[in-house]
Image (cartoon, rainbow, N blue to C red; front, side, top):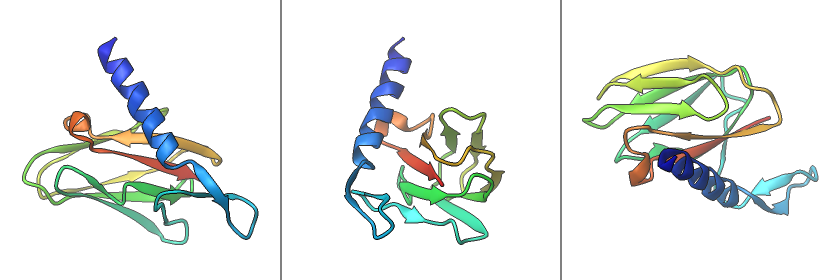
Length: 126
């Protein structure tokens, strides 16, 4: 129950952090924090370094390939809520994941080993 509460609170904080407060020229909302738009890239790269994800907020297409690069000396994990993505990445290693996420959705992601230390992020699928 406590883990579920922590996950829910973390997801709410991320949604608030990535919520919109302005509009882009297309009329769609722009995130209030820096979300890296990687839809035009063939591969999305998310670095895991200093017990954090870089970038912390990613805009991706629903079928892109994601490279998870662990630059730390400890194991990390990439779990994406609402999906079956749950990948461990050993220290100094890279894991590749192919997204299969519905467009128009937003998902929190986190490291299950370091979530309490703030290793969380968000993916906006467009």
